[in-house]
Amino acid sequence: MEKRRILTGDRPTGKLHLGHYVGSLANRIRLQEEYECYFIIADLHTLTTRPEKEYIDDITENAREMVLDYLACGIDPERSVIYLQSAVHEVYELNLLFEMMVTVPRLQRVPSLKEMAASANLNEMPFGLLGYPVLQAADILMPRAHLVPVGKDNESHVELTREIARRFNFLYDEVFPVPDVMVGDVPTLVGTDGNSKMSKSLGNAILLSDDTKTVEKKVTGMFTDPNRIRADVPGKVEGNPVFIYHDIFNPNTAEVEELKERYRKGAVGDVEVKKKLSLALNNFLDPIREKRNDFASRSGFVDEVIYNGTVKMREEARATLNAAKKAMGLTGIWNRISRKAEKARKARDE
Ligand code: ATP
Ligand code: MG
Image (cartoon, rainbow, N blue to C red; front, side):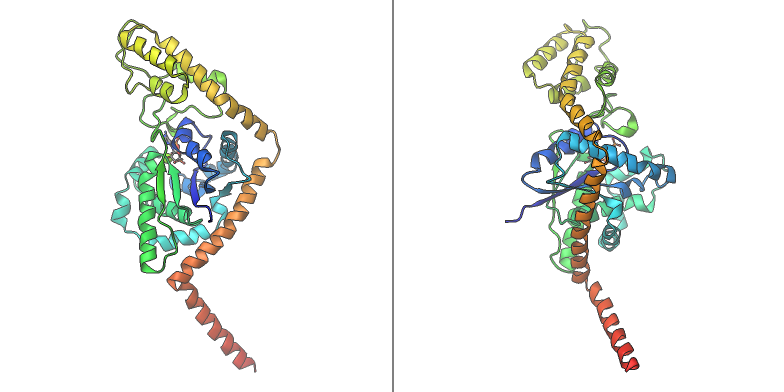
């Protein structure tokens, strides 16, 4: 039996952070064997909030850094396809066809879009940003993916993809699977500042490529229990970002439990809790950093990975777009016209 397929990816807006890892990357790495995986460098999606030339000029370097992060975490380019969205022209076309399968009020109800507009300081909603989940549907359905591992904020987008797939199949023919969403073990990782989402743009992220000293510095500056002004004041563990990170990244559960107990009693200082967290995070990141450096030192390697993946994806995309247009009867229009034109030309020439 053919393997089922995964599609997911990220916008090339910078280096990846711990939130990307627990929200989506960890699942990708885990499922790489079982599924045929397609990972998209979603550069067209960056245009929805940042269409200015200066941002477009950053995409090449950001894409390289992001793919280095993928490889460093264990995504295997021999097995998985990593491709550049803007170089797969079929996606622009499929996006347009899918625009007919959805209403504006439906898109206006997608919760993340308003937040994205606000955090990009946009007063009014660009047409393209409203269409963000439609373009995402074109991405997901292009390789006819069955499963989409993403963070919590993307769940509602995949729901829309499901609706578009159903609508298309109902109107025309069963071309697309209705894909399932898979949210990571940590649906949304909190930021170092206690803000509900770790995010590049909010400056509250620990990058997968941060060096030891940077991690220590970021952890030292982390938000903890705001009511705890001294080490002998009993503290709150629940919802405390330092302990949330301990629970996720410190494999020494006995140490974590012991720290929590003392924290609740006011018998441990923030300094000790944070020092142990830095150690745990650096242990987690060490092998990733090492692999990253190794891949970064191979000149042109990352570009080759993206190139090969994109060539492969283009083939897949052509087949899907053809199937979609055929099902819709669009291919037939041109075929009939061109056949008749050809005949007329021949008749005239004879
Ligand atoms: P940022 O918000 O930091 O700029 P991003 O939102 O631009 O990052 P996206 O490309 O939108 O990154 O998302 C890539 C994937 O990573 C998505 O599946 C998203 O849900 C997931 N993700 C991003 N941040 C987090 C987080 N803090 N916790 C869990 N998952 C996350
Ligand atoms: Mg996002």
